[in-house]
Amino acid sequence: MNEFLKKMGYGPDDRVLITHIDDMGFCHAANVASEACLDSGAASCASIIVNAPWFQEAAKICNARPDFDVGVHLTLTAEYPTFRWAALSTRDQASGLIDSEGYLWHTREDAIRHVTETAAEAEMRAQIETALAAGINVTHIDTHMGSVVHPKFLAIYLALAQEYGVPAFLPNITRERLQGLKQIENSDEYLEVLDKVNTSAVPTLDEIIIDTLIDMDDKKAFYRKLVDGINPGLTHLLFHPATDGDELRAIAHTYGSRHADFIAWSDPEMKAYIESAGIVHIGYGELKAFL
Image (cartoon, rainbow, N blue to C red; front, side, top):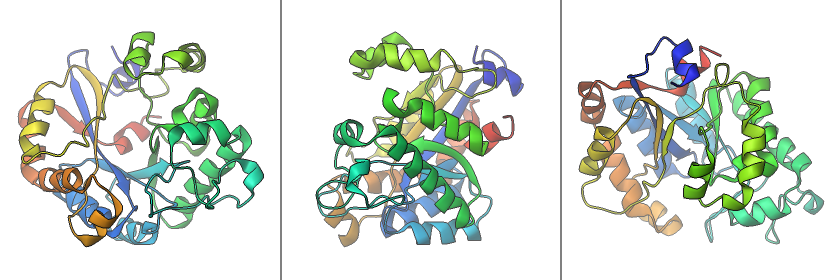
């Protein structure tokens, strides 16, 4: 059984689900949708890209709604062709944080290849501190495009979570799961770090459902099917809501999927469906309370 859930008072058969918004703050359309999804109660929490152009609007939303469960979506990448964001901690090319255009890297692979551990720590810290300075009650940290949970940066990421007293998005990774995540070449490095994690003191996720950027007409049915398959333990289900329009279409080719996520998760019926299935619906704030 998940040791952290046991500490929280749950039993081995309890199904506990986090429904998580990724990419709040990256554009106005994402902020509008994220606020609606959090307000509905169907989304239990969200994380914000602090470096992104619409962070200030996201912070304003969070200050107006201190009940929202919001963390920092730590990023070393800015993937869109014409919609970019820079590092907060430095403009020094020697840090490896910055590409030839002056922004964070387009790809996870480039970020891992170029960014030094020292620069990654400084940048992650700057992003957390910026969120706190903006008045956000940071409930957790997680990762944009998976870059900061690479073995090169994973120990730093977990140390920052401990320092700031927040849970980190952390799958309970086995060698078999690494193979499924196509990280076979890094298995030993991952497992060396994770073997040191005290799972009764640090929350770990038994399952992660991350492949939800899918364009389809009815994503409510898609998500209800995923909810039906939730197993005992702690599951993190993520999605990327944003309202359709010229802004979103100019930024991301995934606009159809993101708008469908907005429709699905802004509907309080999704929360009712989760609860009617006997699933415990929580956010990272509940995990933080037991650290």
